[in-house]
Length: 115
Image 1 (cartoon, rainbow, N blue to C red):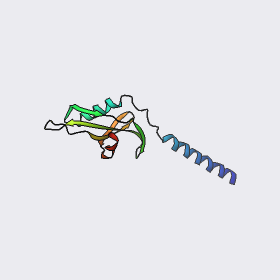
Image 2 (cartoon, rainbow, N blue to C red):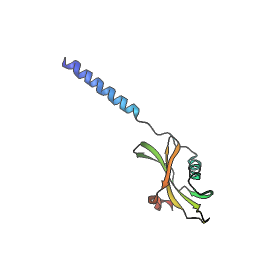
Image 3 (cartoon, one colour):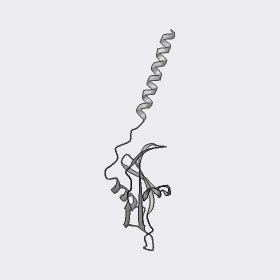
Image 4 (spheres, one colour):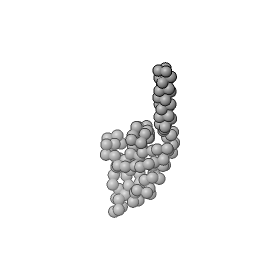
């Protein structure tokens, strides 16, 4: 009787572990046109997106976050302000999930890496 209960519990534990493992999603391959996707995303955020200049000093990196694994890309943008003057390159970081930009935000910690 103890053996039947032991095997039943062992089977339940194995089923639970396999069901948990199947819910972990693997990251999608990173899109080869990531620079174009970032520029398209930034068009909505910038005042004069046509005059924007970009730098992409590093390749995308796979990182773990709260929502699972995602690709991040450091980049810099030099765009015109409302007065028509360039503001200088500001560091940003874009976050990709399933091959699309989820957000891009200023990232002062990347300023050192953009040189």
